[in-house]
Length: 95
Image 1: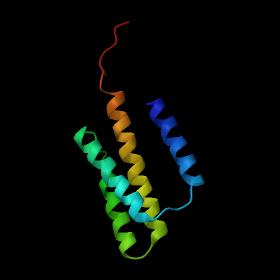
Image 2: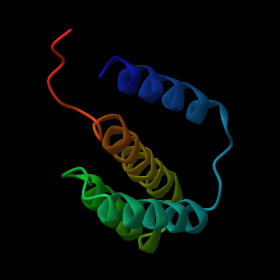
Image 3: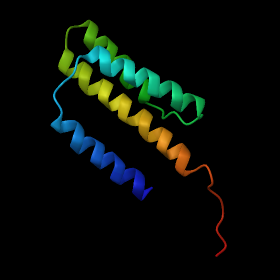
Image 4: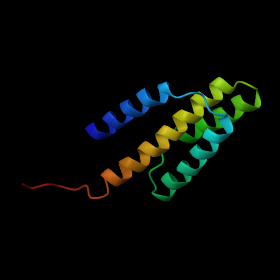
């Protein structure tokens, strides 16, 4: 859990430094990462909602909002994948 929080904080800090790419690129990346998280059976509850919001904002011409929501969906999908990896060997530890 601690690793996930550190990773999330780092991603948010680095994401704020980058320039805003075209929403289409981030949306496509998020879609791919969501597919991977789904295959791992670890997709978070609101990730697809953020992606749909990004698509709607892009259609409405609000690229800033589209980028924000697409980045959030992308981040959540990657974090869900990391969580699946971290919990793959979870179980009781009797040491």
